[in-house]
Image (cartoon, rainbow, N blue to C red; front, side):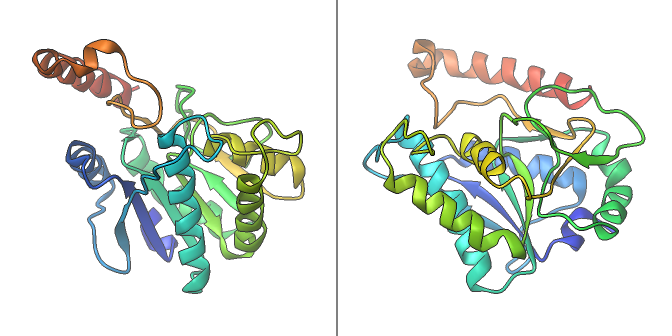
Amino acid sequence: MKILDFFQRGYVINLPERVDRRLGAERELQKLGMTFMPGRLELFPGIRPTELGGFPSIGAHGCFLSHLSILKQARAEGLANVLIMEDDLLISQHFPKVEASLVEQLSQCAWDMVYFGDDADRPVVLPVQLTRLSEDVETATFYGVQANLYDALIDFLETLQQRPPGDPAGGPMHLDGAYNVFRQQYPETLTLRTNGGLVAQRSSRSDIYPNAWYETLLVARPIIAAFRRGKTLLRSHR
């Protein structure tokens, strides 16, 4: 069984104007035999707010709202679970080889949330095992959530937005940080992770963090793109 067969629906978050990222995501997803299909794997139009709302950047605010909106939609439609991905995902060459094992492990234990990778460049250790997450993670590029966690997670994220930045209980922040704080405040949440980075972030121009000055130079973009493609190729084969 494939990962997407285990989850009732998958979403890939993509700002409509970032066609480059959508195409890159499509290429990566093909490694797992995934193609966009209504009701199974859908492209979610990323939200681009006009105000910071206390968040570190407009992009961080939009990312937060996009993930939150997917969770709300999954709850409203009664989905048993949901797989959430970002359009800069980079899938390891090892992932297709261990999909069936991961699905079997997910089917045989109770869990609330699962990360299939992070951006820490952890080498893949075979056989890949799912273990309890005991530390912070740096990204939310490819993860799954069970329906029993929707209410608590949605309420928590909505509450963060209402607090001022830097609030001791948690205020507006990057989504990955919000999930880390959630797990700290709700230690009973069983979050799993793979014992190796099966998914990381593909090198691309960011919509969340400030870009280097040379990113604005049209003449430099083909060179930067070529460099990123090479970097991506090397990382996917780690």
